[in-house]
Length: 156
View 1 (cartoon, rainbow, N blue to C red):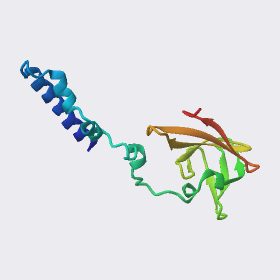
View 2: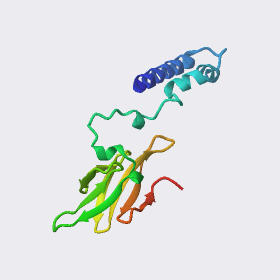
View 3: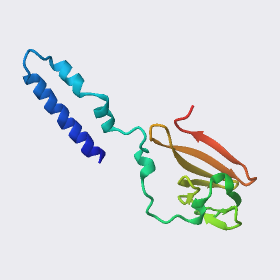
View 4: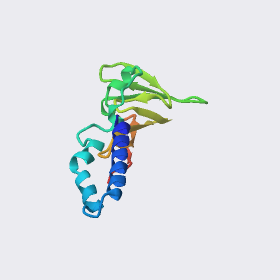
């Protein structure tokens, strides 16, 4: 829909520019353009009250139970290390336990397990900033129950 609005506005502006160039000496082209480039036309290109496209995406895949909770509500209960890969045991507030590996989704903000160490699990979650950009937050969930924010991209 936005592409169609942009195409219509672009065509309209080009048509107005051509018409203004052909207009007679009695009416300057700049005044014609200013009268047509009013606030209503500019607002037709982007609605400031509309949610960013990143937020409006519809999730079509089924979420696991582990993706229903915020990271602060989850607790790391243990880590199982092996020669090739490690797995972590995470408990939900309801007492359910889940085994996760690197790459699994965790948390309500589409967090993904990036690494598992003997005493912690690192998770990258995403948030949408004021301009609609999707930016990462890196957290470390420790065995002592501590959830620490390690890195915030795009924030001061």
